[in-house]
Length: 111
Image 1 (tube, helix red, strand yellow):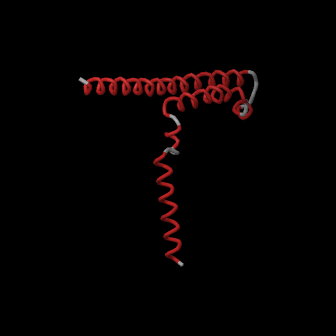
Image 2 (cartoon, one colour; image 1 turned 135 degrees about the vertical axis):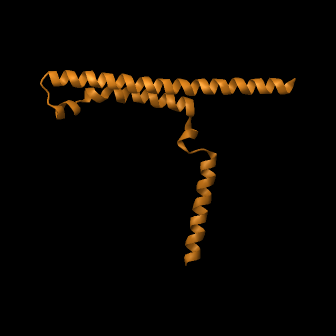
Image 3 (cartoon, helix red, strand yellow; image 1 turned 90 degrees about the vertical axis):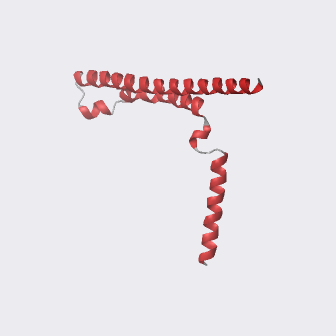
């Protein structure tokens, strides 16, 4: 009985995690598609207003939505994947310590 409950609870947690990951990727696709459209509209509008192509692409309005929505995307990514996805988890610390110790051993053997 306890085994069934544990297995079901594990399944529910995994299902929530998959839903969160899927939500992030849907958000990412919408972010890219909508920003391409918005940037295209802004570029088209600026070129119709007499801006040359270089001035159009150097206009902050073309990139502003990417930047500000991108900050929101970063926090969504952090909420779904967390700091461990940056590679600075406990495993990283142990691997880095071992790597530095190995480098020190090699350096002392060369002397």
